[in-house]
Image (cartoon, rainbow over all chains, first blue to last red):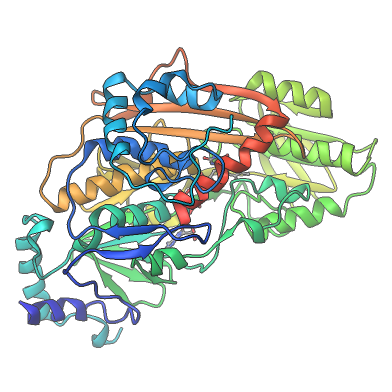
Length: 127
Length: 423
Ligand SMILES: Cc1cc2nc3c(=O)[nH]c(=O)nc-3n(C[C@H](O)[C@H](O)[C@H](O)COP(=O)(O)OP(=O)(O)OC[C@H]3O[C@@H](n4cnc5c(N)ncnc54)[C@H](O)[C@@H]3O)c2cc1C
């Protein structure tokens, strides 16, 4: 099988910098844009997660995996999202909130709760 | 093309049979041939998609980005270059995080065509790259009325050099010179963007340069302001923008800087200005046409659950090149990219697609050097029409008028959007 794999990769040899990624344990990387360290572990395999897919709608404003890069709220690891979601005083947040059902919000909240909070990110509400 | 750049026939047959075998095996079972997903174009949609493929699929897939430019200049906020609030350098992004953090392979070339029989991408140097899945995120192309020079009559609708050309032209104006810009027929990239630009330029000329005799004339091919009407009307009045609907450009003379246009039923009208900023009508990027993915229209029809082409298998199209009711914009392109990344990972691991995707759009429009408005909408999947439609059409699109508060918030929004896309 290894032989076949290398043959397959031969098809890509024109890409000189092609990085062969091992199938071993997860790879820990620095993915924080502000230069501070946020450890993200790339998974070894894909697992289906509807809540994560819905929750990815939060990331444009609240950062990848809920870790904001500025004073807009970080939401990683928060346990009270479901209660606060529709009540937010921020007009843009309340406009977005209107588009999600209670069931979807519960799913998003259950996923956000599991996310590690980056120490350098902000979770104070500055509104 | 050298044979070295290709699998030989025997290897290729082996690969084909492996591919057939592995495409039905869950990723988590650690097969020795890792699926190869190639993302073509790394703007807002492509960069997000490649990142999230690795964030969620990790070591179970190999991801390659093919993109000709090593630096991407964001069109989002690029109108602020025109009034000195930002430089194109400040809106520039590289792919370092994609390479180093997400272990994505970058190839700085263009894709010319796709050999769907052999599942290979044909690149600008005629080399080939095999794919199991390809995601096209190439943005837009323009429909020109006639052959004229974009360096003389810039669109500045793809950011970078074009933005700086327009900026230099605006800065060469003296009091009394006119600025004429045109708005394409919808759908086009960033619905509020042209109205936003007219406001920015009018404010800049009047309030920053102190011009009292220059006019900003806006010729719109649409029959009315298509988004945030009340807000843009107010700003047009405040800054003195001369807005004219139903004006369709028919010819651009780049030497004399003269436009010929039709206004309503009156044909052959002309207008000459020191600076012409024609934003032409738009269509999907060239590669979408070259690969036969439009089905006769101007954009690529797709399955909205997976963004897979309805015309060719294993080719997905996201961002401004795809056809749906979603606006052509970067924030929602980021949203679409995540639905697509998830769908590709589900398909490769033999899982059913998520049936109720939602996407959201946000456009902040700076209307002066101190004020901005915003526009938002959330979309849901409509299975009957295979489309993404407003979750609640009596509520969306939702907007907030120009204010200094929104102007400051705009940078918080863009920082997180840029980080979620490029970092
Ligand atoms: C003035 C202005 C303001 C805007 N403001 C907002 C806003 O507030 N909010 C918002 O959401 N959107 C906004 N937008 C819209 C947003 O910028 C675009 O909709 C977004 O960039 C589209 O993303 P994309 O990935 O589809 O295309 P692009 O970002 O254009 O990326 C396409 C990439 O594909 C590459 N490419 C093309 N062809 C090939 C090929 N054959 N091979 C390889 N690579 C290829 C290109 O080099 C490019 O890097 C604005 C746009 C403008 C002009």
